[in-house]
Image (cartoon, rainbow, N blue to C red):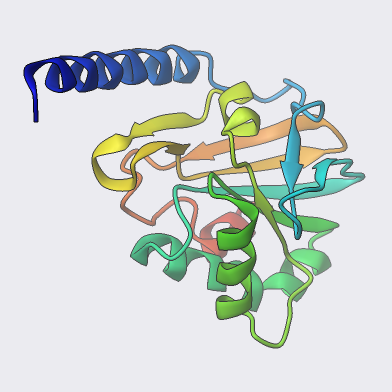
Length: 182
């Protein structure tokens, strides 16, 4: 690598880390509103959508599709979907900072027979950034990613925010733990 390339890479990494830290410093709190004006993608890369949740919903933020911890977290929500419904949850959204193709492939791998859980691609990390729940994962995942979190919201109002202290671990955002708190 040339000295110029090395310098540019170093500056870019530093800037990226500072921006991620700045965005994460204003983390969403109970009483805040969901950033429903931020466009995301669900099944098609070329069709951005705005989420329009009604009633009580759960938003599960995961750092990356196909990663080991995320691939053990999401199935818990798929398996316990009916239990969440029985507790008054309308929909469960799994938010991933990945493109729509990767997100859709991951959903199909985890639930080959289908699932009512909505897998949402936040491909530019705008939704999670607006929540202050973005982290710099350049070293392991190549760029900004969602922190591992769960938000319980009623319409657009946030009721509860649960964030893992270590994004590679699954404790407080595991499906049965969240279900027990509803």
